[in-house]
Amino acid sequence: MKGYKVFHKDWTCRGKHYTCPGYFEEDVKPKICNAGMHFCERALDCFNYCCFNTDNHVAEVEAVGEIDTDGEKYCTNKLKIIREIPWNEVLKLVNVGKDCTGRGNTGNYNAGHYNTGEANTGNCNTGSNNAGEHNAGYYNTGEANTGDCNAGDRNAGNRNAGDFNTGDWNIGSRNTGDWNFTNLSTGCFCTEEQHIKIFDKETNWTINDWRRSNGYRVMLYCPQKTKVVEWIEEGRMSEKEKEDNPTYKTTGGYLRVTEEYPDRQAWWDSLDEDSKNCVYDLPNFDAEKFYKCTGIRVDGK
Image (cartoon, rainbow, N blue to C red; front, top):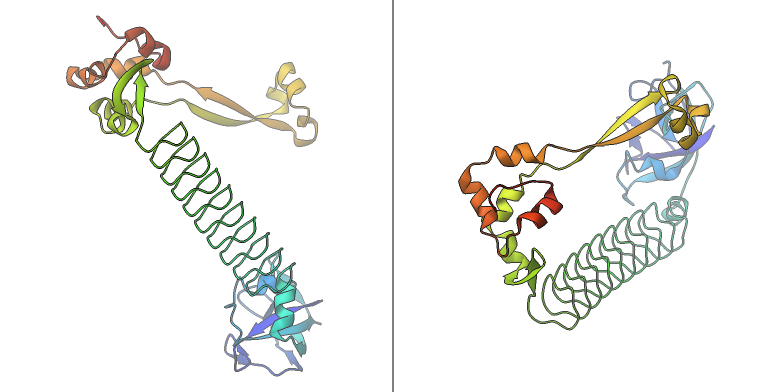
């Protein structure tokens, strides 16, 4: 079996000195991480265990003895070191693209690692020309953007200089509109934070005023519905479940997902009057709308 092995600059590995080319035997039964000489079938996998450093030597090897493996690493008691691989060739082996200086890239001209686009200097990008990390778009200098040309982080839109925008060309943060110079705007070309409706009526509050309010802090503790996932064997499945999940014939069952709704009314009834008043004091409080949104009935409001 052929593979690859990385050595320190003095041609040692785990305290053992090697030569290239060379042949080495150990009187052991190979056992991953315990006994034997280790290698990987793919050059890229070697760098999950060794530094990606051009001072190290990378060699093509062949196991000619017994072999043990965990699926990624291999070890043997008889190892041939066939030849040293120049680093310009190593870079081609660990990248699908060309002219990459990192590893695990499938595009071209990447200086980072695990990019699937081109000309990225960060890591884990699926687009191109990104200088940050975990971007799915293009020309982003921030991180975790799914749009293009963003200088901030976690934008789903394009050309934003702030963070968490779903619109385009915004300089602030958390905007869902376009071309805004503020935060939390749903419009376009806005320079001031917008006032919000509460209970369907206009107020002089911004979203930040709401989030700083005592009513908001009380409602943070309102219980939320949860999903329960349960494996249901074929013998316990109803005919409707079998019809909706035909893969049960090969899997022997299916995952049933149900939603559990908490008793919000009981939670509300357990609150003291001061906490309830924090909610009642919200602008335009409307008991019927509150019930429609939360399922909570309030008395005398």
